[in-house]
View: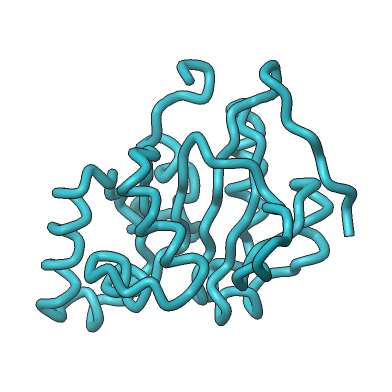
Length: 179
């Protein structure tokens, strides 16, 4: 496991990337690279199921930080600095709906719920199939998140593009240089 970094006042702003259990999560390194190129330091929080969709060793090597997916024990030090912003990608139907409802039953969703109360800028890039997106709870959840100030990025690939549009979630956040 990479050694713990120490953050100082001169360090880059810190971005939490929250990863959910979607097939495209295997490519989370693309989002991490894009964020690092935009001058973010990145730490990853995965939903318990999302953890199984990523190469944890590769992600930890790329970020230099441990992946979080479960609560720490009382008295244990916080393994990641506080975030300056949060990018949720890929965001699943389950996570979007639980987050909007305030159902903080995982570290990932609890972190998102707390971000609202802390005023942390947050953007989400959903990865939801058409059948689930048609469910009325999903539209209501997106509307509630918008009302909470969450930026909703479009996860639909551009015409002719096969790749998930990772950078859209970063485009929806304030610039790292402006923080």
